[in-house]
Image 1: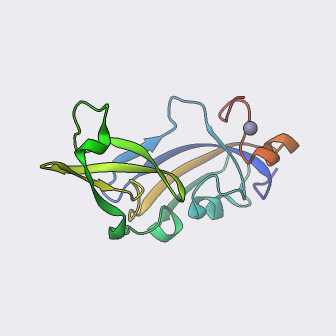
Image 2: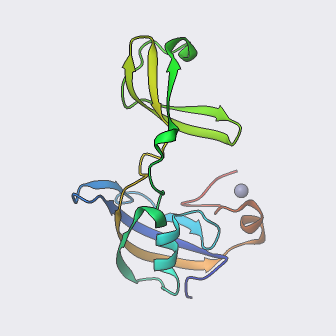
Length: 160
Ligand code: ZN
């Protein structure tokens, strides 16, 4: 069965950055499962996997506009330390979820300047060119329930 819209695809992957360092990998874990054509994974990887079948291995380099987008300096903001009640110590690299009018956003602490915390709302991989080594391990039809929820159920997916 070939990878196409509405199929559930299982992949093993290793993601490396421009310097060759490993950013993420499914090695030693269950394969990642996603529904093709539902925006579950980045667009560049979806395009590269279209038409592939179980056992296929691909290497693909994906520019930011096909991955997590370019960095937006407007997403850097300064918030008073008091806003972080309940957090003992705020350190660079810490990540928080914040409520915004557009929904929940992940922000990363860039640094702490006096009583101000400088936050970066960009995706941690925004602006990066990503290299994927991918092996397709299984392709199957999605169930009606999976299509309705927009994510995979069972091993490698969400559990309810
Ligand atoms: Zn579900």
